[in-house]
Length: 400
Image (cartoon, rainbow, N blue to C red; front, side, top):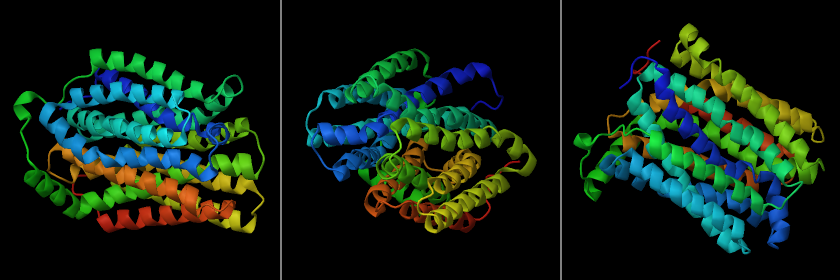
């Protein structure tokens, strides 16, 4: 484990960030294209939104398998093989003419994307101690947010010149370039001497132990509910801005950039605030700001149902608070369990993507065409995040 911050070890985290950006762009860059996909494939708005839900269902379905595989065979093979298949799924998305095929391929795409969190982030936690891991995770978070912050804007610009299929072709090309760099630069943080064969019985025992660990589950749920709010916004946002308020896809891209710029700002303050207040207090500050954003979104959208700016202000505050707590919450959750790292990351990632599925469902099913429906979702998930963090108590793994 690396205890001293060394710039040469940033090569892999930065490459992992670029790979993750490519993976998330397969959601974010094509968000403005959802209405176009609906028209081109002659499907309904609900089925077009389900392309997001299927992606999250896929990413949640295989993580409990990928974790043990990375414990058994190493982090590199799991991530690199999954990366190759991910590239193929983008090619299939670009070529399909049937919504059913697109939904199936999106499901597979989600499975392959989950290897980033399971194998890639397991390597980060193994390579760095707590303080430096949080610094690295916060730095990565500031860069990763480029995907949801600028992805819709980039996608909307692309749609001004070519059709939605080119979005997936571009992602396939970018992913191929990053994967080649990962083949060269990704270290193996789980050496052969630490790998052990496993069986179904031991897997069930380990996963049961992780779930039964109240601290792990509570911290993971606090992270998950906050993440859920983002996904609800990503799912319903394009339809609120473009379909309901009749703004252009460029306007949606700009609003998305504003929302996630708030996340980037607070993410870059994590190191300073962590040193000043400690990790636990930093998480509480972030979650209570997030709750404030959810309350603002709910009140403003109910009081002024035709005033989109009120919802955007609430979402921006929600995003700002999230930037303070995502990195420390994920690290503390991982440290709360003594089970093998791959299994811990698999379970944490399952919590996260399960929250993503819930967020996409709330953003598509619960959303009824009014901004208040999304405002209620933001208030609810931010309140649940605070409740679960307070329920976890003060972590025994904290260092100031």
